[in-house]
Length: 310
Length: 281
Image 1 (cartoon, rainbow over the protein chains, first blue to last red):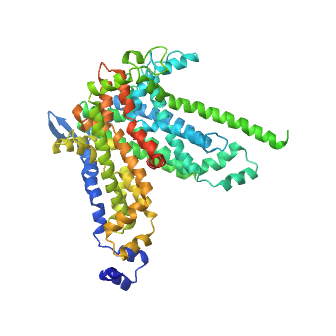
Image 2 (cartoon, chains in turn blue, red; image 1 turned 30 degrees about the vertical axis):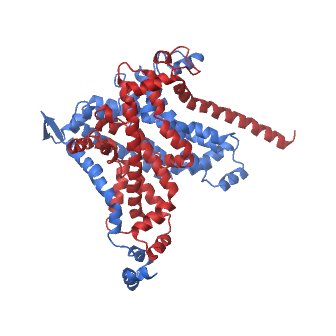
Image 3 (tube, rainbow over the protein chains, first blue to last red; image 1 turned 45 degrees about the horizontal axis):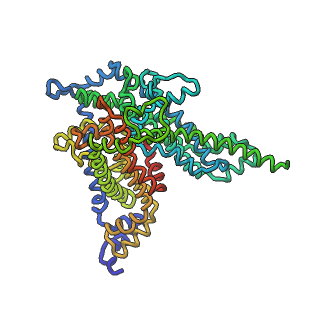
């Protein structure tokens, strides 16, 4: 107790008759919070803030014969006229619009099943659907590349049994996109189902009882109680999956390497190619900033939509 | 039959239908793992035979030995374990310290700093690929462990998670420790950190997984096969014209091992860690 008296700070705070929070905030040296933040600030400035600013500067430059020159908006105007960029953007958009809804609807249905008292051995099934998470992106890309092999693949062998002929999974522009959608759905659905399940378990049981008393069918209970209760989780997963898919890189890199004929080239891959295959740092950085703007706009639209509905 | 019997029979039927449907889906989820496991036991020439193998073969040891003899996969495993473990420990220190400052102190610039952390959550990390590469070139850090570890240590998501968790610790508890004469570091290490141990375990798993599986950034800053991490090594094995699929799939399977071990030993925290960081990498 005597040690507390040594510090003059509490007395000063008492004199000021400060509210409780102010007094507690005066109970430590002013520099303390900055010391706790120091590692973060240094790392943040050096490896986040500086790179972001540097990338913006780079996006305004051109490398002319080893000499970096200011080029104004040249990289951006080039971007707007680059058909390959729009191919990549279109591919990314198609995968986003197909994969995310399929995955999230499946995940909601799975979570309902996992939450249902009539499902037997619930914990066991939950783990089975969750286990794809243990595979890294490159590893499951390699695995699916082997499984989806057109001539010798396991998947084509299996669907042969139900009379579906061999599908050129990775060799056809349309099927290559389908392959990526299938692989991503396999990998991420269980994870999203667990998020929904966690949210579902926080919905009060009395809401369901009230609905039951009112004679609501199982579907009505799902529609009017479960879905509204899941709202926060749905908003979160939609926005995070969108941001994640717009940056898609690993899966197409490993599964299809962007092919066939650029059918699975994504914006992330196109950025990588320009930066580290052609070493056009300026153009790669412009693609990065275009991606930032697209992600920002789509996230804002999604937040808006979700807000207006409530 | 009484009414209750009919209801019971009906719900038994529903239970059977639902359980069967979920089981069928679970088979689809697990089948790729089964195929992988079987594939590692066959010689490269036999993996893609028709009809496919459903029972294990005899080439497991050959594939295992061959992978470590013919490729630098062993080195990649060592690199990945060292880098991921170091990254996890340092990342925990940076994120918990920053989270503590944001949650339990009032100071100038707090709102601005935290705002900056939040903004970077939504920014695509690919924007920084080129500048980070240039930084590593100018520091002479290509192919180095520190190039892999340092840039993502101040993980915005980790800082955010630690701040949220520490909010829940009552101020009175911290105040009491201060009055008892504990200095700020003792309060942090002795009171705050032990109180939020489950969240720290979850973040540790998240950090480890993020580093273990990271691909595009290591692909950019690692230039020689001796420095490759597991994902880069796997991708490069696949890229070789004469890929030995027995070895490649063996490596693919082994790359899951540390994660599986984490999963088995820390199942509860593992799920929490994945939930907490519900973000596609």
